[in-house]
Length: 227
Length: 245
Image (cartoon, rainbow over all chains, first blue to last red; front, side):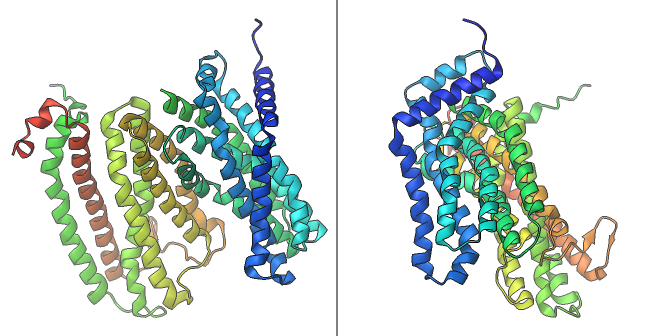
């Protein structure tokens, strides 16, 4: 068999994980429904005044996205770990970081991207203006991949542990706080008429930093968990 | 004569050394606490703008400095353990974590006590407060991950990785008051000199040194227990006088 290029490997892993996800569509839907439900709970909890809802909207959508991405983290490695696929993958003479990056990308496409596409509809529920909606989508588009990447580190560290689901939130949520602050901050800046460039740039910088470092850290974490 | 630098990197020799060292850190710490708090509460003059309430800084500033510093030391030991596979470094990292968490918690608590009379609120969502809270969460996450893994070797290495990843937060806390325009004031004590009254300086530096020595003493006592627990099946532990009884 011919040697795979790095990006060939990436494509292969993404395709495999997407096919697996499509065979179990209910998992994908559960995350999305959870996201919609959490966001919809807030108006019921705090009352339907539109002024207040408009102010809360970016924060609520971001927190819900954060929680929804936590919910699906358990699936990133655990199925492959349980049936032994992960062990085989680690034996492959290819870059483990690239393989992990492929899994992260697939995870984002399955759990992050649907949230980004769903967010405008939820924003309309909160009476957000068209301009802030665009900023919200842009922020989520930059931010949700970071959540998947940081989450991958947590998922790899807690692989196969008792109560791993709760533990992974405890490890990952504090590290995700900057994403939440800048993501929600961008929308707030837009609503109050200030420039969104600084918040968006910081989100972009976080994305690049995470893209460079987290696949490698996750690969190391997997090695620790699998030995 | 060549000195064997690595003699005390073995738990069995380190255990004995630490037992002798602990009083040398514990007693100066107690004395400095007494001196520093006495100067801080009785000798130092009342602040013009803040009144008597400012005196909490004699505890708040030292514990805040140490909460960040201990995290870096802990991450450093964890990294050493991860890279060189030295057992003792990982044990030191897990011995430091509870003390660091305690200091981070005290920093938030004393900050709240100071914030109520000064800012009129126990808590504000300002960059420095939030990132200090994240630091506390990171300590708790480190301990929770370590506790969740049964195999101590895997626990050490997984927690070490988490500690290293989390250490990006420490510079964020330290520089937050410069980067963001926050409610929390910048630091008064700088390497280039300070605008503080001499009595206040003496009080703060005494308490800082006291907390520092306390942290060393307590984590050394804790690392002794960890060594005993981990090495309980080895011969040198069963031959110890305090174990034989």
